[in-house]
Amino acid sequence: MEKKTIISVKNLVKNYGHFQAVKGISFDVVEGEIFGLLGPNGAGKSTTLEIIETLRSKTSGEVIVDGLNLDKDPDEIKKIIGVQLQSSGYYPGLNLLQLIELFCGLYNRDVDPIELLEMVNLKDKAKAKVKELSGGQKQRFSVATTLINDPRIIFLDEPTTGLDPQARRSLWELVKNIQARGTTVIITTHYMDEAEYLCNRVAIIDSGNIIALNTPDQLIDKLLATGFERPREVKRANLEDVFIRLTGHSLREE
Image 1 (cartoon, rainbow, N blue to C red):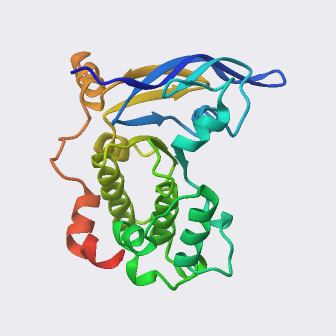
Image 2 (image 1 turned 45 degrees about the horizontal axis):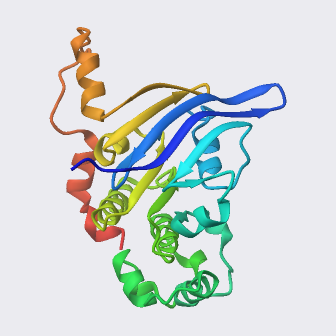
């Protein structure tokens, strides 16, 4: 059975004065997939995300989210998406339980805070404040808050930037678990190993244009078909795998 398109972007343009940050891009996201927007800093991927999230206005083009037109129904779109906040966006005086209860009130949702914290492996930090968490724990908590309104789609903008390898892997597993619940995930990253591990399909954006869109495997196979070879022998593991195996990735980032 063919899965339905949950996000459709057509000819999206965003200008800042004379500078064109997004240059008429088009892509579809299929329900239930992890879709990656990849590119260097300044490529236009975060701008594209913020437009779909209703947080930034577009110059022209069409965006449809789960059948809702961005121009006509931005408030309805907000109800079905989850957007990751930066950790500075939380009330510093409240602990994690109180913050989740606050969000439940804002979203008018009834969520079991302990259950949600357990899902992101933070149950033992329920009474801690955000500033007392490690970098990886802060990121996992911010992902947890995107799930409170039971969204159909969540958006993660470079969620592992600045994290150590153990914390990154821990967050990857969380994202996979969220997908397994049937949620569609849109992620931006400039870590290619992250995109290769997580994403069902990726769009590579450079200077405001999509220059490739496919599954990671097919993009790699296409490159290999040109006769491309890495200058050194490719090993089936990398140094990060060694590091995590030796230091125990599930032990530290609790």
